[in-house]
Length: 295
Image (cartoon, rainbow, N blue to C red; front, side, top):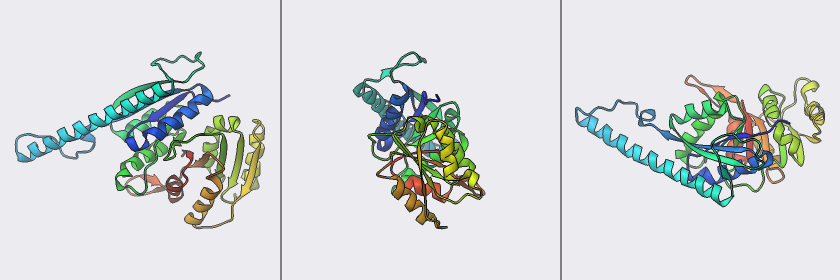
């Protein structure tokens, strides 16, 4: 059976650390997984577009900015390490650096990685079974950086990305809803979510869009899952071209009854880069349960 054994845990802020750690632990307990927690220590060059010089007054100003930023980055790294150490101590998680698959216990480690947060999350996620990230707050402008990191994870990793809810959850993956529109992204998300689906107590497929061919409809997916011993309920959503209307209905159907929503992540192309599509962004902002997404 496929399992989430190597779980990458992204710790970058006090606001999201508790939920990210709790979400990760709940998943790890299902599979005796390893929590590979890490914090990206940003280098000043990642945020300052100008070179650091010291021959004139501008150079001194830039140098002061670099020193201040470096001090803030170091303090944040210390805070994330302390949060990790407190969490594993409180939950009796074994701290281990090397793989010990024979252990029938959850293990964990903490790493500090220097570099660009977007690049690190994209590269590291490619060699993990699952990556868990915090959720940017749509009401806090400063959380825009978190959105760019999430964008990099979804668009550039090719892996399963689990977005933790804003509040630390009690369960994850016990009751799963699949937002199904028969796209390639949705199909990939279902495949990557199989470890959750085969262990879930309840699975439902919400057909969010009428497929062009019945061979790829919600019932066809339910028939496929049945071969894995998964009994899935199918639900049709009222048709609408409005992102807000469709998003509201998905949130209504998923939140309260389910603790995990599986969905493809969609994009729109700009002259600068790929960014999250409007429906994906709507679900991230409004569906406050764990989200498993991929592109």
